[in-house]
Image (tube, rainbow, N blue to C red; front, side, top):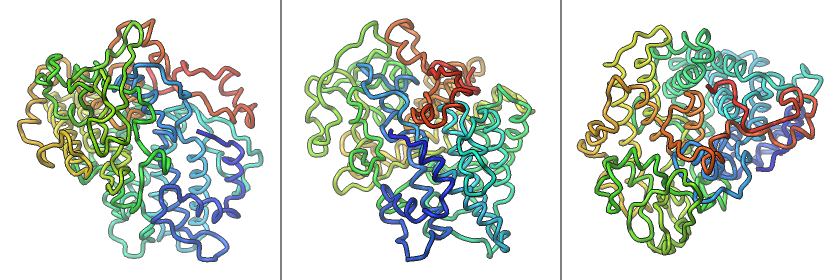
Length: 546
């Protein structure tokens, strides 16, 4: 990703002068919903908000499909048969966040100066939720980031636009305060609250959903930091469990979705947003994931007991199920071109010589292939994850919540059920999905039972926490950055193949963070040096990591 440090801070200084030029031009992915500039000297409050959505895309995933290239082998949710020749750490949307931070700060200032500010409570809450989400997810890539003084040049309160780095702990605590404020201040009854109308790109002005979204993020982030700061995190976890959370496996999934954003495209090559695996043609299903989904290595797939296996992945060129060894002593070459777009017309095309099972081709083509309507959102958080977070709290007995294996099992099984239901529905409703399409949008009860009763995945109190982490990790298939956070904050307790730790695996196992964008060293050198000591290394653990 090309990052421009000057643009990041300059935007915070002159954002009021260039809002139209800057934000109205952010139409890369929102062509159909961006309001056309009406000749006014500045963008409207609603237009600025809508523009934030275009910079929310790929905050974690990255513009260059970093998840496919690096995060899958790091988390072991997938494998690559050769080390990527794409640069590591270029994916997290650093520049997009700081453009959004400047915009949010500007909007909050506009509200504060408005005599009718009480009518903007819901708008302020939305802004605080989005800012918190984006700030924490970005910090999970880098650790400490410029935050409290960044993007405030226009306010006049910042005299030096070369902003220092803030500790990740401070960013977490501040963002959790914002999320708590939002949960407690969202207003579902007032008829005078300002509405973003058609520019509300995320939850279509559904305030009840915003409350559940904000509270679910509170639970995620408070639990993420709990082992490092239980004083601040504990009360938030306990409070979050007593407030509305995302629960509907289909209706409560939060993310950027073509349902709310007509014309939204995930085409990597075209619009720059896609989760298309063809940008890392070497990605394959690895043995770590396979071993959690199949009872044996039968090539005909007769050992597969988890229906998500055939949704996430596909057979090799010979029609067999063949996982790639997660950490071979030396890389094993693979052939074929399984992610070639020509497979839209012929699913078997270009798989000749393809020895190992691929990521399912349709995930890279949903909403991209000619005439297709995207069904897969760019996920922020799902009800399944929320269930697993609750299960962890009950299984560990933390944050003042009594330990309860019964409650942990209930939430664990609800998480598994929610996950299978969600992924089945997505595959079934995907209009271009033809091969191995689920028989119905709703999984059969036997499909869910097969996972809940299998010895590999059935709940047991002796191994409860490990099982919870494993199934959360499985569900986070399309969010490898969140799985990476889970891996690091649990000290590597997610599924892992430790074989050959000094060989192939070392390429990925040592990676703990992204290095800061190169422009930081160039334009913010003193603060960059104060943060890194002049040695910005990817093996340095961030604050949340064990």
